[in-house]
Image 1 (tube, rainbow, N blue to C red):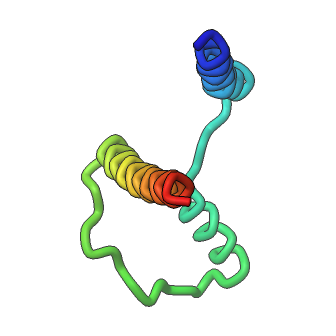
Image 2 (cartoon, one colour):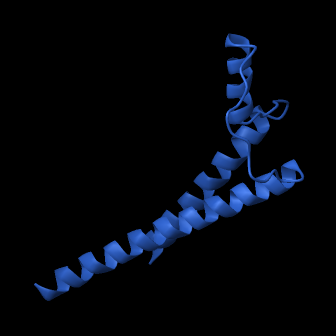
Image 3 (cartoon, one colour):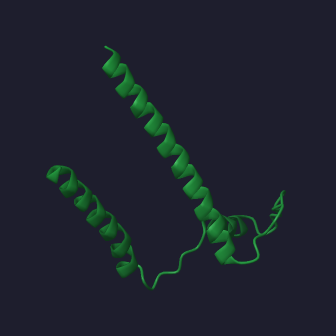
Length: 98
């Protein structure tokens, strides 16, 4: 039981480091989405370029856009976690039936 606790504590500390270090070193940085960066490069290459598709709905603010992206990430992480859980239980069940 102590081994599991130490492992979990190490993971929690690692998560904290992964979150805090970029906040410290990147505090003054401006973050821009990949779509905006790609649009800038395309305009540099071909100033007459016009997009052939428009979004069906544009979120009213950057915060809403971030929220929707976070929800999308959470749903994806939940689905992947569920799949890994099912696969692990199947493997455990097969191992006990041998």
